[in-house]
Amino acid sequence: MGNASQIVRWSIYPSAEAVRQEAVALICRAADEAIARNGVFHLVLAGGTTPQAVYESLCEVSAEWAKWQIWFGDERCLPPDDPERNSLMARVAWLAHVPLPAAQIHAIPAERGAEAGAAAYAAALREVAEFDLVLLGLGEDGHTASLFPGQPWGAADAPAVLAVYDAPKPPAERISLSASRLSRARQVVFLVTGTSKYEAVKRWREGEAIPAAAIAPPDGVDVLLESAAAY
Ligand code: 6PG
Image 1 (cartoon, rainbow, N blue to C red):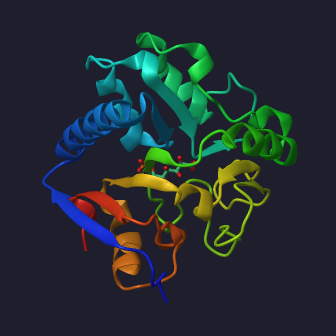
Image 2 (image 1 turned 90 degrees about the horizontal axis):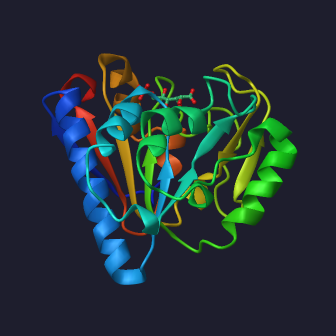
């Protein structure tokens, strides 16, 4: 059974490139709206190759970078300069190339280990009641952020940030925002490209309780799908 309370809007695009373009436009719109409303834009980033292409494109746009606050949905417990770190990927692809103040880039301190890093990040997140936009990927097994099938995803009343010790995809030790914390957002957007995602999309659409189905913000989630991944 899927999460009965999740509202999903599926949008299908002919190519990964079209998904990328739509994602960039959507992020810029969300930023403008949030800044007009609150003077700040709280954005949560995902790892993965699809988001990476989006981040690279964000180097080319002009935005009020000084008003962006960057958070991360998950991280791998590796040294900060490890090429597998999501924070390093985002920095190299995008954040090092725009004048977004370093103090507004909130990397998960995963180098401290899952338990200590999760506690520190939960404390930092207390200042944000609601994210403006959460970006997420979809793994072939239906995982999102570092919420994996068969493990606790942090539904109602869960802590904001989870220590993960036995992720099936290496590295096993990770830190992830819980499904409930990721759902405290005005907008949640999944970026899904590649034929390898077809099975996970099928399971999601058929109502299986994969981790991606547990993300249930009040206004629902948008899934930007390359047609090759669409069921
Ligand atoms: C990880 C990856 C992973 C990724 C998905 C989708 O932490 O293991 O970041 O969760 O987001 O597998 O990835 P792609 O965008 O690369 O297809």
